[in-house]
Every structure is written in structure tokens, then in C-alpha cells.
Image (tube, rainbow, N blue to C red; front, side):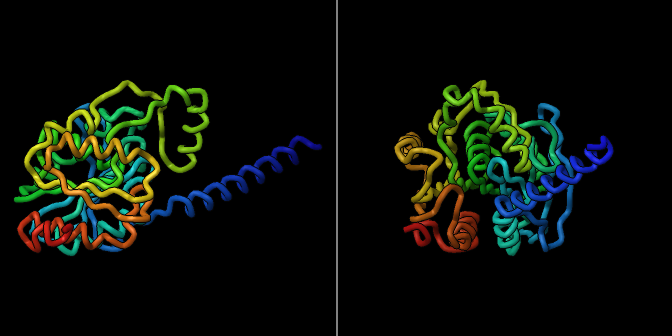
Length: 279
């Protein structure tokens, strides 16, 4: 085959492959921007990372930070839908953890980085003078919000959705981690297969402050063991309310978003009491 024709053929094949990959990614990880007006800004973390963030103005009742699961980013469709519902009552802040979307760096299997991201975002939101600041975190986002409240405070209420109490042991899978990193890159996350420890929710549960905490667990959760969650709840000594959504998988709410919002309204003094909502 003529070299020029061969080059053209490879180019067409590469473009077709890229189009297929993008189509597949859009179905597996649907994304969109908010339909409501929003403002974009950048946060610099304590370790110097640049974090892309957004604010959806919603009212003077306070602010809620919505933190996404790993791999997805702040444009993840279910998260944006939920943020827009929250914006009926609060100013809502979203952001990309490092290694996602418009933020810098790479995500590691070590919560020190995401914790610094959360720390920078909370500090920036607090600068706005809000009388009340809550956080709703999904999986990785829930772990970061929980850790921040336990280690540094700064939040008036926390909801975690599908947040693992512990990280999995990656040693048995280290050989396939480069392939896994490539797969995550196709999904839009820049990942580095490094695990140097760092704080974990299970280990700091005993230091969680006396602020409202709602732990949401899916009945079909597959990313962590229910026994680990129960042990963490014991270490919290009654500080957490547990909401189990039967049939829900990892970070799924199965149409129960309004219950979480009503819970936030209740603990911020604007609605029913938590016991009326959770039972």
C-alpha cells in the first residue's frame, strides 16, 4: 500500500475509534452543564493544586457543597440534577476533584489529595460569609467531606452517599493497574495508581464533631462491605442517622433526592425534624 494511503487509512481508523470511544463514554458517564445560571471560579488548595469550581446561586438560606464520586466530575448528570434541586433553597457549589474535569493533577488512591481539595473549597465558600454551610458527598466526595468535618470541622451538616469507610487493598491488583488507569482515562479521569495511606473515615469516626450527619447506604452496594459500615457507625457513637435505600447501587438515590433535601432543610432550621424524615 502507498505510504500516503496507509497514513490516511490509519487516520480515518483513529478518528472512527475516537468517535466510538466518546459515544460509549457519553452513555456510561453522562455529563451536562447546569441549566440554571452559574458562575465559574478557581480554588487553589493548600498544596498548590488548581481546582475548577462552580456556584449556582439559589438563595440566602446558606450554602451546600456537592462533591462528586471518583471518575465522574462536577458535570456528572445525576449530580447536576441534584444540585439544581438544591438550588431551590441554597447557593450550591460543585467542583472537580484533582484529576477530573478542569482541575489539575491526577487522582491517587490516597485521600490526602481529595481532602486538600475539599479543604480549599470549604475555605473559599466560608469566605462568602454564609451563616450555614453543609456538604453532600458521593463516594469519594462523601469520604472527603466526612474526613474534613472530623479533622478540621468547617461544616454544619454532612450527608454521605455510598462513601466507603475504607479503601480497598490494591496490592493484589497492582499488575493490572496500568490498564485500569487507561480505562479511567477514557472515562475522563486522570488516575495514578499510588496508595500511600492517608486518613480514612473508619479511622477518624471517633473524632467526628457534634454536627448532623446522614449516612446514605444502598441496599445493593457493591463497593464496600456492610459490616465495615456498621463498624464505622458504632465508632460514631450515635452521631449518625442511617438511611438505607433498598435496591440502590453505588451512589444511587433511586428518586429519594427530595428526602435528602428535606433533611438538610430540617437540620438548618427550615423544615421538619430529622426524626420525622428518617424515622
